Length: 314
Image 1 (cartoon, helix red, strand yellow):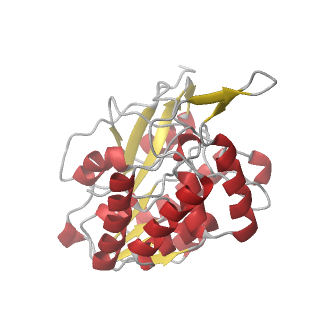
Image 2 (cartoon, rainbow, N blue to C red):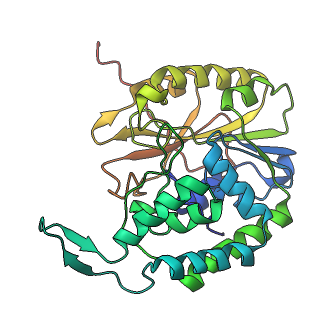
């Protein structure tokens, strides 16, 4: 398994062993579609030969394309140059001083914001990658103008580790020859016709959690209405005999997504619980999260649980 250099909310690297155990076998799949591709970590690690990676967020899509197609040395050397130019930390990060307002100033914080200003003027993806290694939670976030606005995270570039991740990403991408798309997921789904050897994996935004898709609902973030629209498409694919698997969260911070569980149970889809697995919501741990995989087929690895939906009116 290889990691993606793109740190993305809901990244599935820690769940890959669990996910792949329930995916159809290689010989059963002619085309794999990673519908909400994100960091690309699923596309890079599945065993299939014909793969489509789709990501709607243009900034994330562009990062994926550059990492997959630009020689790693060009990217790594540019990051090192940025670190030297802006004097960003590469060793243990400690409190540097206090301002007149008695506010802590961390080593590299001032320099980080200077570089963030530079990136928002030039939009050089190599600068964005550099910022990501120092941002809060190593996360990506953009405002309405498309400007990167993640605060400083008191983190650092680890030269050997992070260089190897960039190199591995590049060469794995070359071997797998993944086709990348920058489309709305519903547009992709609407074009899928009957082909029983297709397999679609979905990791949509979770309607009751914070994520890059729905952090600002006023900007058209993912809602329960989008969930229900997605369910209609998945039911259609199921009627066509097309296999799919969807990651989702049935409970987070005490809020239950009962509409997801009811839909799955009513349609006899299987709910696979990933017990004791953390969902990294902005670095705050699992927050009593119930992360699941919902599938419309009989997995070859049969360790799933189907949870009965409780009608509280009875």
